[in-house]
Every structure is written in structure tokens, then in C-alpha cells.
Image (cartoon, rainbow, N blue to C red):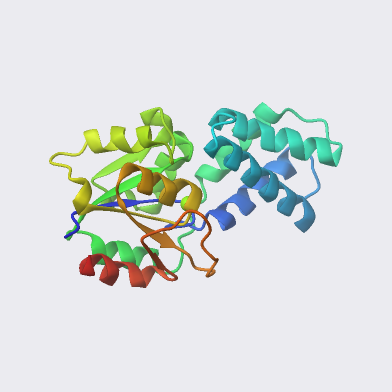
Length: 227
Ligand SMILES: [Mg+2]
């Protein structure tokens, strides 16, 4: 029987792609870059490639944040300060918290039946503000942010540090639910948790094999109840 649920935030509860798109458009406009679909798509691709490098341990989270803008500005031939741009971006991003369809209903269904824990690699200042302004914070017993724990998903240290902060924690009563195979699912598997992959687009699984997968958020509460 499951008692503890670790939930990812971005692209599991909040629509990060929409939030990111809005915040990047606002940021680039502010630093004088003409925004169009190509520019937004390249930002998204460069950003994702840098996060993957971080997950492989090649660069730090802070490097992710500046590299993605350095690379974009280089491609576009724009002279702008990447560190300053990152600050501007995080300010805009913190104000964005569009929810994915069914996220609130899923949390309402889980709340009170399980202990819910947020587990996110996002920037602490940004995530705290989004949790407050979205009203999602009240659902969580604890919020585990990589920046505050000093370790990122999928590293076992992220999970071990989180487990240590939960009274009476038992791995075999615990599950992680998230959209990322390389951070949520791999991390959960390494840490000895049951894993449920949120796979709305029906992507094929690769080498990283979740225990379960769902395509919509309303499938998750009945699945957890059956475990
Ligand atoms: Mg995610």
C-alpha cells in the first residue's frame, strides 16, 4: 500500500512548455531580440540539450541557465549578457504557472489519502513563487527542491536527502510520478521507489523502464490505489 507520493512539478502538474514560451518571449523582447517561432523553438532545443548535460553530470544547473542563452545569442548573432538575461527570464518565469489539464483534480483526489511531496530540479526562487501563486503549495507535506537539497534528480543523493526529512519513511510504501524518464524515473528506480511515468504523448520507452505509465493525469489516482 502506498503512503508517500513524490510528484514532479514541471510538465507533470504545471504546463512548463507554455510557461517557458511566455517567459522566453517576454525576456527576449526585453533584451531586444525579435521573437518568432524559430527563435522560441531553438531556445527550447538548446535548453533541453543543456538540461540533459546536467543530468549526465557534465555541467551544473547554473551553467545550464547561462549556456542556453549564450548558445542562442551566438546562433542569432546577438550581443547580450547571458547571466543578466537569465535573471530577467527567471523573474518572468516565476510569474507563470499554467496548470496541465486535470492537475488540480488529480491533487484533490490524492490529497488527504497520501502524503504528497514535491520533487523538482527547478530554480528554488522560481518554484517557490509558482507554488504560492498557483495555490498548489497547500497540497504538499514537504517541498524538495534540488537547489535547496544540494543534489539533483536523478542522483540518489537527491532522494536519500529527501527520505531523511520524512518521518517514518518506507521505500516500499512510496512512488514517484513524473514526465521525465531521465530525471524522475531513472532517479526513482535508482533510489528504490516504484515509478510511474506520465507519458501524455505516448512516447516509446527506451533503456529506462518505468514500473507503470499513464497517459492522462486522471489515470494516476486509481493506479496508486491499486498498488
Ligand atoms: Mg518534469
